Length: 109
Length: 114
Image (cartoon, rainbow over all chains, first blue to last red; front, side, top):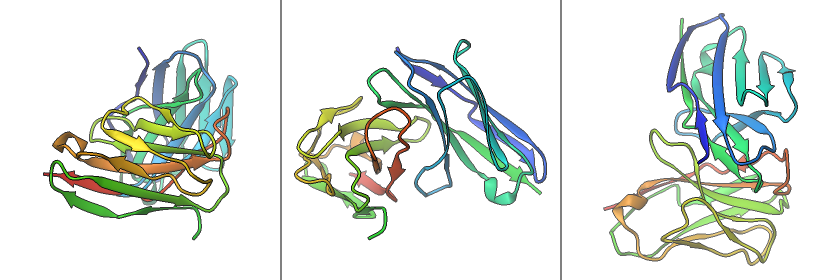
């Protein structure tokens, strides 16, 4: 079967750094996406990785290791507005997205 | 319109009733998707359309149908609603259904079936 695992909830302090992990087992791999979803809102795109390594985009970075079936999203200089759920999704061999349940990130002052 | 719109925003429906959720995009995207999101579960794909005139089944298609008569619209129909279809429904679109194309999401429809 196909499976995406990520922690249910994490807590971090404003101004700090947090790493959200995602492990996956899917039939085929056509890239990994990270989305942000604020409570009661739609998911919005953060990043896409298809090759191994780190992609940096401002305060957010995403890392991929295809051999380990592993990715992480790194958020730096945390702000209160970063309180949200972060969704990991893998595009499988059919070009369909398989989604994790999401990690709820709580930022404390 | 800018992006993707969905209607209604929320709905309470009696079991056994028929319901159509509407989705319209103005980005001229070829691919469109319907997902449901339930607490503790990831987004699950119900149906998708890679281009106007074609549709396909996702992970959880039973009890739902779709049509794609044109590029912009992708309605989702529940023929006879059941309580297990209580969920938040998101419509999404992407330029194509290919590798790397990010999906853009509508604001969602919160559906309660009693």
